[in-house]
Image (cartoon, rainbow, N blue to C red):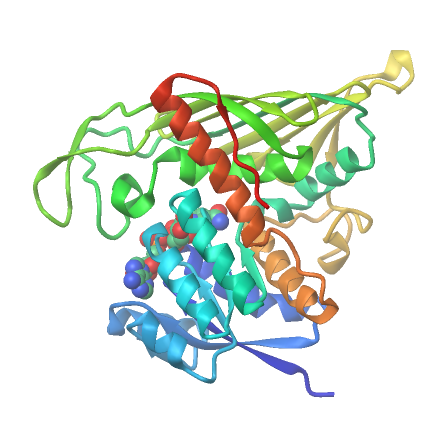
Length: 382
Ligand SMILES: NC(=O)c1ccc[n+]([C@@H]2O[C@H](COP(=O)([O-])OP(=O)(O)OC[C@H]3O[C@@H](n4cnc5c(N)ncnc54)[C@H](O)[C@@H]3O)[C@@H](O)[C@H]2O)c1
């Protein structure tokens, strides 16, 4: 039987434009889906580069203005893979036009922007999702399942960090293509909204709501040349952000992120300590889950390093044979597949815009606490 078509418009052909395009192309090859994703159009401001991208990835057409994309009748889904300052306007207009919306993280630059986006998709009743892809690393999904089923017992601690080192040079400019992450107008914030947002999304998913936070941030290099103006301008993003959190389940947490940890490129790790055991995960070794089970027999009790590649591990029955690994790009394939399966089942796959808003509320509270030096309560989604 011919499958229903899911006609996709991708906004942005950068890093995420590639991961999402790959995700949609691979999902129907490895998962049994009722819909066939169709790469209908790629939208970016430079027509020549958009055409190159379209030819390489198999998009049927190009557009240079996202508003024109939203007007098109032949598009079902708008996928926002452009910088943070574009998310809110595109998502709100797309929802108004009745399109499904998938959006890169952070959902909004602030909770206020994310609220508008959530309101728009709820009013229109359109399927929506935020690309917090780390949820779909099989080892991370398994960690969530084990905590949820009570394998670790009561949780006492959650510890997460995300470390990079690419902005340490004084000479690195801010703004424009490639460096928009250093421009607060475009990015919203620095590592808080960029890297910690990932750690927060995973933590909320695995360990429940965060009630309050106390934070400190630092901008180590105070002025950088702006690519678009050519002038030295104040740097308004946070280069490093550290916070303590109290979860509603009574556990305590530490979160740390920086782009000044020399030697680290993308070291995302988390550790969870419960009364019956602990779990550790590390993005650099993403197919492994470290597990300590206090109930193991005394003499053999110790940390186990489990290779999450067997058929009974999350997602792995869709891939190769047991023992063979998958990687970063597969998380986007899983997310595309889960989104499409959610359309068929009527049970929307998470994280939805509501989940994205919850993370934005935490990052808002972190930035407010860093400013005031006080504990700040995290707003709850309704
Ligand atoms: N899920 C993840 O792990 C992850 C990783 C990286 C980035 N991101 C998020 O993805 C988004 C994009 O980041 P990226 O690393 O792909 O950036 P990028 O700079 O590599 O690509 C951004 C793309 O958007 C295009 N663009 C900018 N303004 C536009 C506009 N008005 N209309 C159409 N296209 C426009 C640019 O030309 C470029 O092609 C950001 O929100 C970022 O936070 C998420």
